[in-house]
Length: 66
Image (cartoon, rainbow, N blue to C red; front, side, top):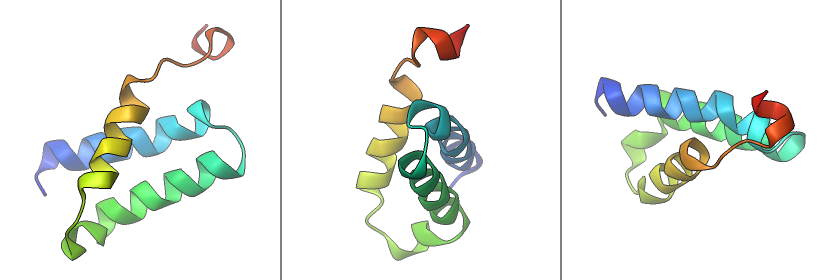
């Protein structure tokens, strides 16, 4: 995994808690940080990278963005 992919994973991990507040966002954040740390070595990261794309592209609610 190159540096750019790791930074995208980390950015998505921090953003997902604002996109999905509560336990769902916390769980997704932990999963993304764990994947960045060592999960990518297991292979099959297509779903995780689709999640990263979704998190980074989905706009936050207006009240959060302001």
